[in-house]
Image 1 (cartoon, helix red, strand yellow):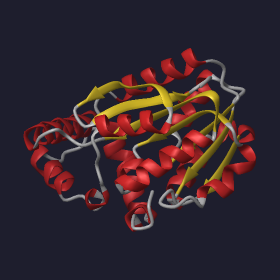
Image 2: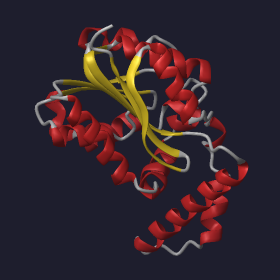
Image 3: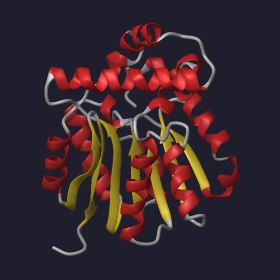
Image 4: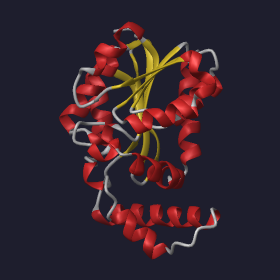
Length: 245
């Protein structure tokens, strides 16, 4: 996350996100499935990097599939890193967690000795950066992949039109309401919608289209670049570091 994301330094917002919003993401398990399928198809995972790791959901999925892998996790939020530490307590011997701000290249100094990585993933983090910084980060990621290594971004992207954005927001609020009922909560859909539209972190989102981001990856030198999965503003995309010129 970037320096201006002060909201994510608070335990209250972190807990609210993990307890509510994260669990309401449409087709979240399918997103993880396609991420793991792409990673598995690319080969064995010995060493991976999770940028903007949050509570460690992506890392846990990789470790469940590749239990001998060594993981490096980076996040700007201390509460998120604490949540990841708890979530991944059974894998601690394989993990190293770092607090770093992806808004600058300084994060590279922390992970340099653990690179290169077979796999680099990110989940709902890079959209907090400016578009110029997004592209710079994709270049930095490319430089820290093994030859043939894969980068997968599970990300919040922009809608093509305001109508499509409204469709996404309506779908997401429906998911929040369904989760609320399944948990036995009493908040109405209207109350959840009001909270969602006026949430504290919304102003931190700097969304870019998945098409533009895939174009950047191709220009940087990734191959097999594509959007592997998409539902409205949620996309799984990435590419591999070329094995030959």
